[in-house]
Image (tube, rainbow, N blue to C red; front, side, top):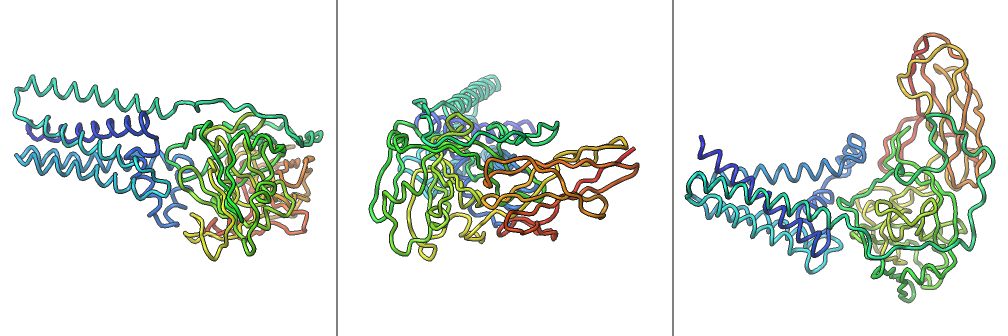
Length: 489
């Protein structure tokens, strides 16, 4: 039994040592995206069927990425444990070859990633070498004391390598971005735009609370000094950040929403964005005849497709560089991202953007449209109850019911609330600076004892009332009325 435990431990430690070496090489010397766990995890994401991805987002929310990384590591450790047991039976070389093979699979995954670079295979190949040599070293015949020393030394080295790699991956950009004053400032928020009701979503969502839904297992951190945006139109232009800053940025309040948001879900937020109008950039590059898609590419290879006519119709579509008065946080696209009001994020809000291409939907398909999501993705009229929270116990009498509603680029005309399927009551809606933001609302309910269901629906400026039927997000966004159940005593 003791021999089996030592052999299994050797297999586990060889895998951890491999991960430590690969992590240090990726984050410290190359780039975090080339980490063996990240490239394998990214490949898993790409190969996962859309319904499974939707289940993961719905079930785990923004924790889906840590869970996936944990699953990849768990599988790796399980295989390493088996290989360690194999080595314990005297077949050390085949077991070491198996450990090395896991690293080679990582190298294949790295080489086939959408935005792979020539050196991206190095961390996985280094991990293969470190893992194989570690297993061979730990399974050499040795005294118990010598074996314990080897375990301790390799374990300490592994922890140090992983820690150093994570610290290097989280390093700040090499240069600070100083935002210019907007050539066209945002309108001052009208009085009463934020009702400031406890529990109600603030009109402006702080960056730290703004939702994040993307496929990046590691947040890309492009070097600001070396960042460029390549725009392919009738000619190709290349813009540095200095070029972008010289083009007279605009400042606007715009609400973004994710197509994966369930009815009443959290994947929607409003911020004040600073950026250069996309129409200006596209006109410089020239729009080819017949081009109907603006294909944007992220630093990690992800692509999004935006209708050209939407970008050019006069709305405040922009290449954003600032959020709520500060440079974009790394998690929200530093140094630049797209913001196109009125469309779900997967076709309008590419983060860490490095390339734009004017092309046709018939010729090229973006990441999510290739997986069955709708090509055109206008945001549906939606509303949400924030106050009271579900399952709250309330006192009878006057109860304030409040929430937010959105119908970007059309605007919310009105909001209605009802109790237990009864008549609809018109809510009071807050002022808004433009139709591109969400709108707060409130209604006073004379609550009576018992269990009650509150429902909300919104109507946009075009006269379309929010659909009542519940539909899941795939393929073009959820529908349905949000409801909460409360108890009044």
